[in-house]
Image 1 (spheres, rainbow, N blue to C red):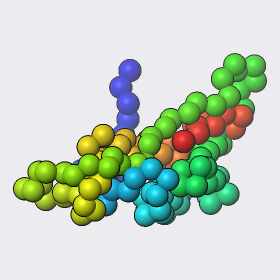
Image 2: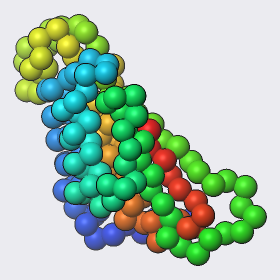
Image 3: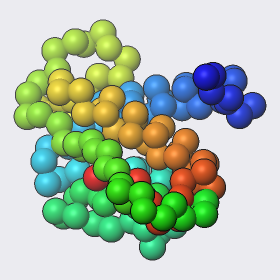
Image 4: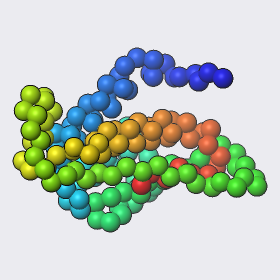
Length: 147
């Protein structure tokens, strides 16, 4: 079984955008419960690029988000699964990035994404965009929750 990708997925624009997002988040790390800029950027991507309604985005734990991607296809009766959750942390670590040659090195002294959360955020945004584009294939009594 082979997946058929839409035409816009065949060029590198989507993937390069995710790389750019990861580097942007890496450049502007924020420690736990202070991820104001990161939360705003994630919300912007979810609404403007994924096309997720603001009604399906809720704040959690001050700077986190809970997002529901709701299915639009006919409901599947008697299906045991109603929700699948995908998650990513937004926070960075309180440590100094010492790689001075990195073009997207942390701009916030003493805080760095040395944990991989910048990559997790970019991956989750990519998943959100792809899932929302395919909401018509997800049963209407099912949702994907991003946390």
